[in-house]
Image 1 (cartoon, helix red, strand yellow):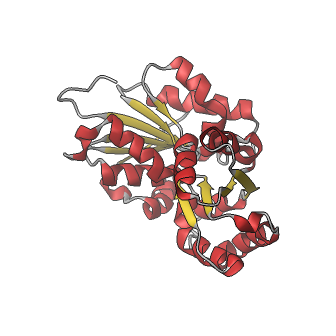
Image 2 (cartoon, helix red, strand yellow):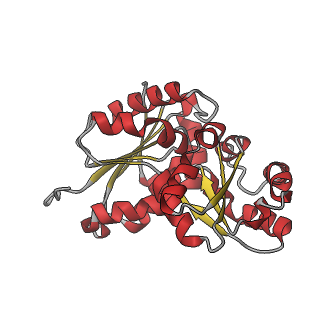
Length: 273
């Protein structure tokens, strides 16, 4: 990619809700000179229970809005949209379109010693098999154990990061899953939704109780940030602007989104797709 010269590098990030702000936070920490325009499609959350064709349509609509400005790259922060919409987006736009699945798979392969890798995500992400396919390309002998944990998205959107209901959900999802002798061999777990990193402390506790040991947690927000560093090394210096947009309930978006990223630093806006 050609450099942007003296102009501040500009990227767009979109997600189905506030979870993609984990990507904004990671990117801003590593590349404070980036101008970031984020859109959370809160009016149509969640994406994970919808058909692949619907998710692709939503992703194209969101990107059409974000690309009205001059951007140098797009990050599809939603794992479900990454699984369903990247080919269509890459065919339509000339700038780099980054998903979160391939970077997450790369980090998982690097982190895993045993080759037994767990993945948790939405129903659509898990059903797509996208992580298993991406991991297999990098490590053919890897064994991927995937579990849909869709309720976690709603709990994150409520801001219930360390709540008894969240702990109960994690135990309900992961208890039976990890009791399988093969699944219990995992040494790495991919957080296959950008909402999930907010649960890291509680998730580590539940995993330790179930397995009697710690395992590596792979956060795709951190993984995709490394790709952004490779694209825009000049943005490691400077002070970029942050623009945050939602498609519904801006007050709630600001309240809950502030738990993911300090929204007081950002311009906030409501958009209609």
